[in-house]
Amino acid sequence: MLDQVEKRICEIIDEHAQEIIGFGNDIWYHAETGFKEFRTSQKLAEGLEKLGLKPRTGIGLTGVKAYLKDPETTRGLNICLMGEMDALPLPTHPDAWSETGAAHACGHNAQMTGVYGAAIALTMPEIKEKINGNITFIGVPSEEFSSDTEYKMKLIHEGKIGCGGGKSEFLRLGELDDLDICVCHHTWETKYAIVLNDSGNGFVNKSVRFIGKAAHGTSAWQGIDAWEAASLSTAAINANREISPEKDYTRIHGVITKGGNAANVIADEVRMDFSVRAKTMPAVQRASYKVDRALKASAMAVGAGIDIETIAGYLPYIPSNNVTLLKGVLEDLSNGRPVEVIDSASDPMIHSPGSTDLGELTHLMPVVQFGTAGQAGTGHGADYRIVDENLYYVETAKIFAICGYRLLKDDAAAAKDLLNGFQPALTAEGYRKYLADNQKFEHMDPVPVPSFED
Image 1 (cartoon, rainbow, N blue to C red):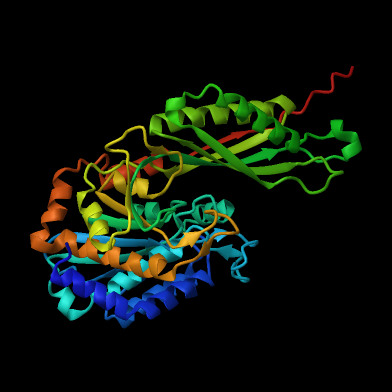
Image 2 (image 1 turned 60 degrees about the horizontal axis):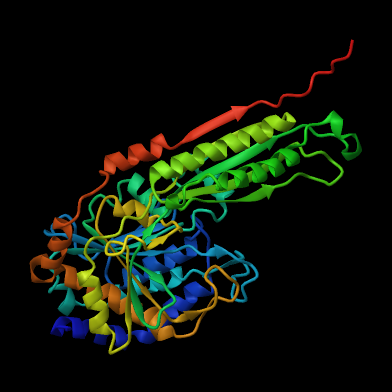
């Protein structure tokens, strides 16, 4: 049951509904991909500044972070309301931004809008004074690791970032070290809202370069065909799928980012990217070993050289052992609408083979994740669209705000309950060591066939 402060939070958000919807739709029509969210981050920062906050920008290139209260003088726990800023490279989407070819076909614009809408209510003096602790608003870049991997690897090589995921980068930089609990969101196929507490796969990313020797297509024996090596590698990787235990939920998928220069020129370079996913990190490492073996064997089979660069992707998602608070918030806001629950903690048979950099956070702090509806079509597809702006944006803002407030009310009793039942799998320093340990580069030179002539 909503208390008087929570009812007032909802009233404030309803009073600003058109502003919130306008904010979200502006992001929708100006979608940007990972570590390129310059316009999006500027819009969020400007919005938070108008609310009287002092956002820091440029964290991990495009990230935004703002405290509700001065962190130097505020005592108590710190709750984060976090939204992802990036979109997908999807130029066939009817609402893709012409400047980027990107579209928000994964609903990240709803997250950012929900965080902003929650900030509108929580910064009101009558609400702010009731909050026992601090709330941090974060816009984080690049959840979609596999989008434009070549660009992200270039940034890593230049030392501008250290990770392909935004939350990973925030953790690497120590920007999440002062948080106690994180509240996050994703759009979902549900009638109203859903508790999202399912375990998920971790993964590593591989950037692969097959090295050949150019020659005329009609004199292929004079060259070394990197294209043939790449083609063999897909068959070799597929052959390994049958020897991956079902319990590991292994998923291996890749894309050719460069496939040669012309049909009548033997390819001297082919580039590929692979995501290697599994339920646990040991399972990820097993699958990664098999993929490396298949790649190197395929290069060796035709005498090609190969570069394999492996970097940490995301850790597996560890479900929370306590979804009581979130379930209560959703039910209190539902007005009789159905509230669904996906909870791997209560049913270990529930598991998602997908990956998210929220997995990183679940190793270090309690994560409260919910989903809301308001969209239709295929996630990551050109038919994804918003069909209920109020549910998609405004209800998301209410849930964010009420979760933040309720975690901290009554001397943060609910937050303390979550923290008392949480055992971190990693420390912040342990996480940074994991990042370093999962960076590897291997090189093999091309091996031409000897002439065998007298």
